[in-house]
Length: 111
Image (cartoon, rainbow, N blue to C red; front, side, top):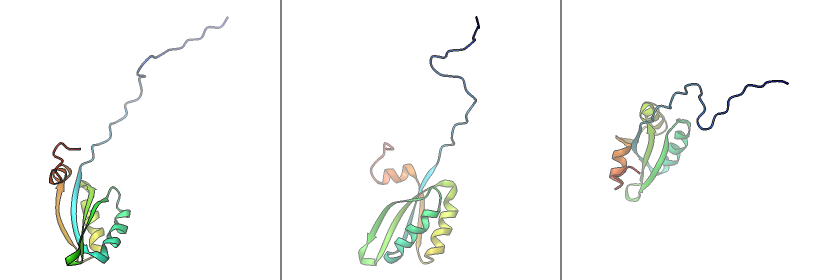
């Protein structure tokens, strides 16, 4: 008769230490460009990892569009270079934290 040794685990199994992912710090950048250049900026931002358009707000009287771009805090230089390369006459507004952006929109609880 053979004897088999085994261990049953009911619940969490011990495993190798897996480091927790670093929390991403999001910021929002406002960029104002001519209306006809807004699509060019949107297409260029596809190549920037972690960046995305939150809102595109047309300003019809001025023939401009304001883009709200969400990006990681460490990629601001890359995104600014990308925007300036495709539309050198755009206006880059201030960087605000994700929490401040939500507060501007009336979502002070952070959702």
